[in-house]
Figure 1: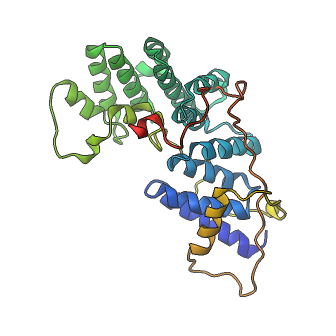
Figure 2: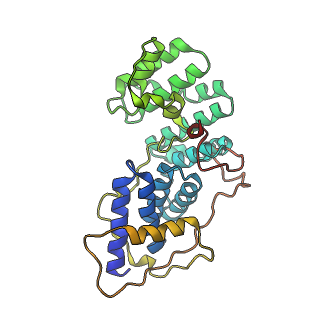
Figure 3: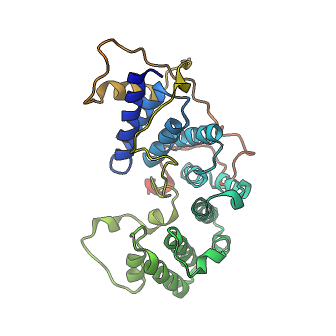
Length: 312
C-alpha cells in the first residue's frame, strides 16, 4: 500500500491496542477505520474481532475472527468465538465449537479457555452436573501453576457451587486464590462470601459472580489478546491495494468514516490527498440457521448485542 495509507492504518491499530481494555467502543472505531483501508490484512481483521468482543458486539466479533482464522490458518480465538455464541443465547454452538476443535493442536491456554467456556455453556443449558464433569481434567490438579490455572480452578469451584457442593467449592476457590497472583479472578472474595464475611464499599462487588466466572461474555470475560501485538509498529503490506466496495453501507462502515475523520494524527500525511483503499464486503460467516459449523456455541437465533449476564 501507499506509505501514507499504511501509516494511517498502523496508527489506528496502535490506538486499538491502547484503548481495547479502557475504552472498547473507541478501540472498535479505530479498528473499523483500519479495516476500511486494509480489509485484506489478517491482523486488521483480528483487531476488529477482538475490539468488537470487548465492546460486546458479538456478531461482528464472530464474523471478523472467523475471517481472521480463514486468512491466517490459525485457530487462536476459538474460546472468544464460543463465548460470543453464549452471549447471543446460543450455548449449543459453543459446545459444538468445543467438540469440533482439535484440542491437541491448540495452544494449551486456548484449549483451556475453550473448555471453560464450553462448561459454562453446559450450565446455560441446565446441565450443571455435566459442567462439573467436563472440568475434571488432569490440568485441574497439576502442581505446576500455569497462567490459566487460576481460571480453570475458579470455573470448577463455581460449577461445584452451582450443584450445591458447597464445601468442595470452597476448597477450589481457595486453591484458585492460591495461584491467582495476577488477580484475574475474584476467588478470594468468593471465599470470604462462603465464610459469611461481607465486604462493603467495593464497587466492583456489584458485578455478579456469574459474570466474573466464565461468561456468558461479560465483555472481555475470556482473556483475548492478538497473535501480533497491536501496540507495536504495525506495518500493513501492499496486499491490500485493491479492495472492493460493499454494495450496502453498514453501520460499522458509517462508524469507520466517523472515526477516520475524527482521529487526530501527530504526523499528517502528504498534502496531496491519498485515495483510501475501499473495503471489501464483510462476509457473514455465522448465519443463524447454520447448525454444522457451530462447534462450541449454542444454537438459538441471535438476540440483542448484549449477553444474558449483561442484561441482568
